[in-house]
Amino acid sequence: MNLEEYKGVYVFAQQVDNEISSIAFELLGKAKDLAKDLSTDVTAVLIGSEVKGLADQLAEYGADKVIVVDDPELKEYRTEPYAHALSSVINQYKPEIMLVGATAIGRDLGPRVSARVATGLTADCTVLEIGDFPLQAVPGQEQLHNQLLMTRPAFGGNTIATIACPYNRPQMATVRAGVMQKIDPIKGAKAVVEEFNPGFTPDNKYVEILDIVKSVAETVDIMDAKILVSGGRGVGSPENFKILEDLAAVLGGTVSCSRAVVDSGWKPKDLQVGQTGKTVRPNVYFAIGISGAIQHVAGMEESDIIIAINKDADAPIFDVADYGIVGDLNKIVPKLTEALKAEVAAAK
Image (tube, rainbow, N blue to C red):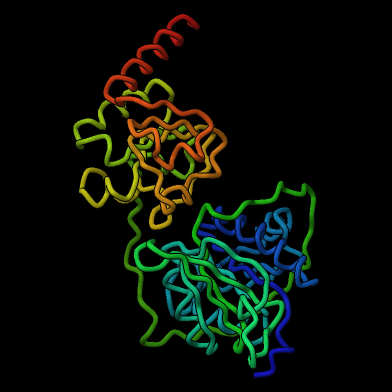
């Protein structure tokens, strides 16, 4: 493999029902940073049926070029045709870096594509940067520069691993939603659009979709919430989350939780904040009964305002909190809720 042939930072621009997923814009924002460090450009790969009209949106969020693979076989996501499409793009255009969102689609697509193009894949990354490999120079070993360093939680979030792929291209990563920042859209931006179709011949690997049933989510995705009231093991019991729900209701917020709560079976994993849960950036984040382990903090430290309530004055959560209250949450939270109710009533 001639590594010098591989150039550019590419992003799989996931779309569903001809609507670009938010993760695609997040990845383009990070791709711009990586491309700047490498003095190269950013290319979005848009796969679907009748999706060419979405290219301008990708340009507004940072794509210099958009490669469109458009075919009726790509109308709905299916593993085989999508894997064929993306691996064909990689073989044809030879990107140095290929980023895929760690969504349900991306987690299925990424490893299959990496196997087809004979490269490695670092899954569920939370940090991407350009640097040297090995990280520290080792006597007798060449230190390679301008490598993609891919950081992800490992061993259940108990350690952090930084991984490189120095001898194969592209350097591929799936990236957790919510950890990268979109750029402010550049209104009116246009990208170079190039259509590419490797040809699709259905075979016994093509599944047949008989029906698509769409369900309506009963809860707000915590990644979209502007106010989160998050509880940890210190809340004491699943029943005690009622006082957090009352506070969230007054504020128009959403309840979330730590991993310990999910592990105890008190709340579903969809509500978990942290390295092994979801990364959130609300305007206000209440950390109630949460000690502040590094795995949790990594998922919420970018919140605009962090308010911690904990009976342990030495809890690490106070190190990242903008406001902290030391005391019994069973007394503090209901009083806070009542005070806010009074403020709302007075405002009316």
